[in-house]
Image (cartoon, rainbow, N blue to C red; front, side, top):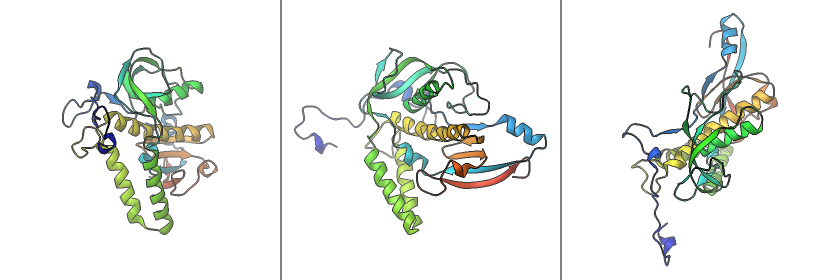
Length: 274
């Protein structure tokens, strides 16, 4: 990075100043960003199961969720305040919003397992998902009170994502699980250490960490929406990669280990013994 600045007229910093909301409150604490991690169950289906109905469920596992999430809108420079209340798709960052009500008991809220009402800080990935929901008529658009944003691109980590995806694909084709595990360790470590971590002294971008993580959650939610719109019943959704459905999912998802495929994690009878 420094060698690329030879002859330059300014000093490049790998560590642009971090906004206060992105600072951890303590060494083991959290900052103020809500990533939208899902943890949801379909209350009506679980109630029917308790009433004696037996429901056949398939638990699907999304492949390499964080690797796929590297394709997301990331801010390039230092985050700057914007109080216009208007989302600029050419920029990315974090946003203080008031989300709209979610009135779909058979579909998880894209905000994840949040219970508290009112304002909250969300990432670019979550905001774009909420705006997309509004475009589809699923909810009203969120109210944006304040944003910390910078010019952005969706291709910032694309070369790395493609390189890791290619190594993973070739290893799977050869039946070699060691490179597959190594690739997973590489992208997982990257995402987990680009925040406030002493394990990564080259990049310190907690905004990137939150945006990538919330993109993985948003991708899973989009899979749930796709299943719902195709007529499947969504039973449960959790973490970055777990989606439980009722119905013929093979009509919708391709089974396998490629990035655009899903694996069967489990099959069980809801209302019976899991």
